[in-house]
Image 1 (cartoon, rainbow, N blue to C red):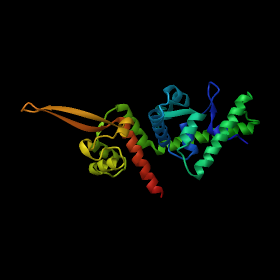
Image 2: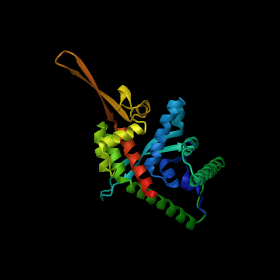
Image 3: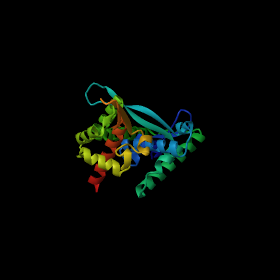
Length: 267
């Protein structure tokens, strides 16, 4: 029987037992974009609330890229983000996954980490015991790769857009974000979007900061504030402020609304 640890963890170049966000997404039956967002939010919270040293975080998580084949018959690929993490990084991430199924998946992962660590300590590696087992292992690995590709293809419209936004580094107005959300299947108008962002704590609700980003939203780098200075004919100066959504913020909100839509459809 092929060891389950081959599906969940692997040995790094320095002897550490590692896993990655793609494997976690597959095991916990979540979209890869959801796992990426959970890790990014976790890193922001750890840095802000616990003042964790960046070097310590870097030992837990490493952002890398992997190749995704383009379905255009040319053999070309595009780069997509993925996190590699050690046991500590996985433990921090998995704290946010709840439910009976999640508990079973966590136990499977803990078992896989333990098995691999024992294998490394003993100096051994899992080697197929027969030609048949080698074929089964190769087939299993190929099936896993194909399944991951299916997950990527299912999220292709959102993922491609998100990467384009991230690459452009262009901020947009909240009204423009509403149009982008509509293009991605989220039916929402500008006024309704403003209301949701206020209700969920991303924009201030009252006072002179009305519709400006909250402190939490600014710390997450979801918005930026553009100030415009206007020299009036009477010699006075008027300063206006405009809330704009960053490239990171556009990715965050598109993923958020798409995830909420899918959760409603699943009920």
